[in-house]
Length: 123
Image (cartoon, one colour):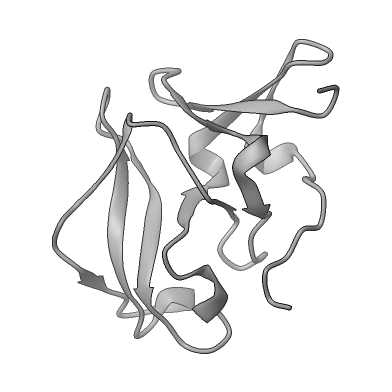
């Protein structure tokens, strides 16, 4: 409980999820958090997008956004190269779109400034 955090949208403070669902702190080049589960306030587009440049080059994904304010929050990978394949189907939230409220010490910190425990699904 000391280390538990609630993830909020930085645009409107809507609750998006929590650190109990965190399964990958994300790759440095993408700067995201991958979660098993998010709240119903995280919505995704039905249509698939294809990455044309950068780390998502050639990946097919659904864009995620906040139901309350419409802020683009991240993506759900549908298909990806082998280095990102372990993230398919997970909710990947961009750290720069998330504010973390830590329950133990009641502090608020931007997710981009937090070092989450090294949990990985690659194995």
